[in-house]
Structures are given as C-alpha cells and as structure tokens.
Image (cartoon, rainbow, N blue to C red; front, top):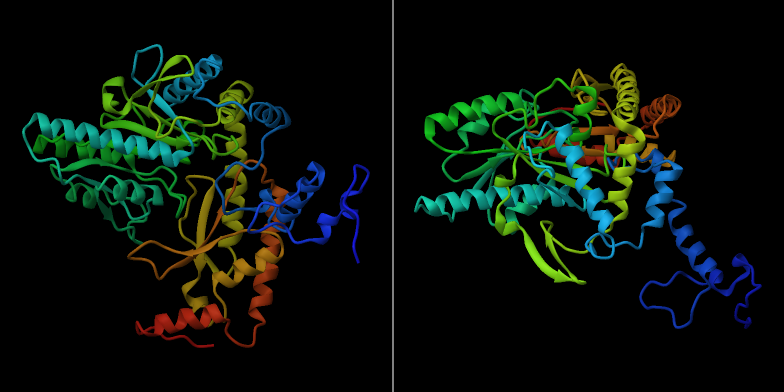
Amino acid sequence: MKFKRNNDETDVFGSQEMRQPAPQEFIPKHKTPAEIAYQIVKDETFPQTQPRLNLATFVTTYMDDYGTRLMNEAIGINYIDETEYPRVAVMCGRCINMVANMWHSPEEAEWKTGAVGIGSSEACMLGGVAAWLRWRERRKAEGKPYDKPNLVMSTAYQVVWEKFCQLWQIEMRTVPVTVEHPTLDIKAAIDMCDENTICIVPIEGVTWTGMNDDVEALDAALDKYNKETGYNIPIHVDAASGGFILPFLNPGKKWDFRLKWVYSISTSGHKYGLVYPGLGWVVWRDKKYLPKDMSFSVNYLGANITQVGLNFSRPAAQILGQYYNFIHLGMEGYRAIHENSMDVAGYCHREIGNMPCFKNYSEKLENPLFIWYLDPGYDKTAKWTLFDLQDELMKKGWMVPAYTMPKNIEDMVVMRVVVRQGMSRDMADMLIQDIKDSVAVLEKLEYPTQSRIAYEKSEKQKGKVYTH
C-alpha cells in the first residue's frame, strides 16, 4: 500500500517517517520536518538511563533554568572569535582568576596564568606538556640529553595520562595502588624519580576509589629529594574532581599552590564545577611556569589571537555557564551543594557498608563518591558477582558501574556510586532499597551466573576455593 508524503498538517506519529527505521548508513534523500526529526532523535534516547539515575558519571547532568537558558542562548558562540565576542574572553579570564585564587595562587598579576580546556583531559594535557617543555629547556641549557623524559603517578590514573605519555613519547612510571596503599605511596613515587622526571602527578579525587593522594606529604618528601639531588622536579595536581570539592569542604587542607612544588593544577568545570560538559581549567603557579612555546598566535577574523589550548575553536557556552555559577552560587552556594552531596554520599556509604554481603573500600569519605566490594566471607559462597548486581539495578533505571581495580589488585571487583547535584536523600533511599531487593533476587539463584562461573574459573587457577 502506498501512502502520500507528509504535508504541513500531518501529525508526527501519523507521518511516514515513523513507520521507517531511523537512518543508519546514508543521509536521507528527502527533508524531514523539524518536529519529526526531533522526535526520532528524542525517541533514541528515551529508553536509556535518566541522567539523575546515572551514578556512574561525574559529569554534571543538572543546571537550574537560568544556567541552562544562558548556555542554550550561547550555543552558537565560538570562544576563539575574540573580535566578534570580546566579552567572552574577558569572562574566561575572570573565571581563571577566580579558580586560581580559590587555589591560593601566589601570582600578583591582574590576570592569573591559566587556560580553558574542553574538559579536564585537555587541562591535564596542557599541564603535562608545560612540565615536559620546562624540563626539556632546562636539560638543553645544561647540555644534557633530553630524549628520555618520564612521569610518575599511581596506577589509579585517568586514561588521559596514558594518552599524554603515548602522544609525547614520555615514559609512564606508575606506583601500584594496593590494599595497604590505597592512595599514592609517596616513598615509592620518590624512588621512581630521576633526572629525567618531568613531574609527579598526585590525584585529588581518584576516579577509581574517590580518595585523595596526600599532596602535602608528597611536597615535603619532594622538597627533601630535590635539595639532595639538585633536581627541580615539580608537582602537577590532577584535581579533576577534588579541585572543586576541597576549597569548599576542607579549605584548611594544603594541596594547592600553598605548597612549594605545586607548579600547576587542572580541574573539570563540568564535574563538581557544576557546568554542563565539556569544560576544564588549568592554572599555573606563575607566568614563568607556562613555556612560551605553548602560546600560539594567529591573525584570525581581524585580530591577533594568542591561544594556549590544543585547538582553537571551542564552545563559549560552558564558559558563560561557569561564570554564571560563580556569580549565582558564590562560595556559600557551592559549599551548600557539595555538603549535601557529601551528606547523601555518607548516608549511602553507611547503609551499603552495613549490608552483610558488602564491605566498603575505605572507612571514611573524602569526596562524594565511594566504592565497595563483596565481603570476602560472603564471596566464598555467592552465586553472583557485582556485575550481576549492576545488571539488576539497570533494570530499575540505575546506572551503578561494576569494574575491576587497577594492576596489582585487578582481581578485586568493586562497585561505585558518584553523588552529584540532583541526588536527594529520597533518591538515596530508593537506591538502597533497590540494591537490597536486587540482592534478594540474586540470593535466590539456584545456579551460579555466567559472570560468577567466569570469575571462579579465573580464581581457581590461582588456587582459591569456592563452595556453593
């Protein structure tokens, strides 16, 4: 049967397109009315986990109506067009000033030295490149080889650092994270350093565990090491999450530019900076720590523009969103939101830790996220794994990730909850109840699940015994 093509009065769900599969390989030959194209794309996302139930991501999924409106109105603005949008550049500079001062920058210049990035990954890259170039120039000046740079951090790194080392051909020296040393083992990190070390990278808000590396203790150990060796190994702090948590919830903790060897810090504005993705910030201790080779100038659209980032064109909306948050929330507002997130995370941490089948990885919370694993005694007779619990929770709309830990403790399977703005105590109660209900379902299984069979097969090869 043939049908006439749509006309202006055709209802969306009475249209011909709604009877056809969505385009997959080729651009459609004919136009599709905007409201129908919108509905097709909207329907693709409908069955997925709702953003506020996604406890896997660190990324902001909620902004208030004014912040959302402001960013939507700026969606067509390209940040790099400073001639056309000069005030955007000014607002970006103001954001850098505010972030730098929040981290106790000692720089006295009117405009602090920093850069905007599309997420903390680009910010990490820029901090790493700066450390590498500074090291290279120093080696050149001393007439020494500069072909074997290395970087030191824990195995709980974010993948951007592996990418950075691969792209710039820098040896990545990793300190194992273990049960005994759940954060960066400072002595082991110092032992890995030599004259070719461009920097050590501690992490504030480790994505794997939610814990913080002890930057103050690292700074003290590094100061002693640098004095003994004559080296000038600095610290770049990867504060993707902690950079917007510590200043508000633990302002007395020294991890930032109050420490001597912290030369640069990176963070994510689209995580606990509370802005929609993607936005990152990197700040240097002083202008002299940002190599001149990283600043590229181009005569673009009638202006000579200098850019530090890895690319030129980038959205301006996120910058406006960050500046809006700084004005609207202030220190008081950020503190209140993050305190609520910590309180809700603490509640979940206690409730999950009290369940007989689970054991929390850490006794206390340092950020609004935490991990847990199956209690070793319970694990010996269980017919399921945390991967099965993840699947059960997904059926209820929750996205709670299960994963294996980094090298050296890769046998440990954990689950993680990240609490962000938008997670209420009532939602936490629903999550806890859904976890309990899912565990009850799994405990009624007559036979082990496929993930359990695969897990036990791997473990038995190592001599471990399980009984059901």
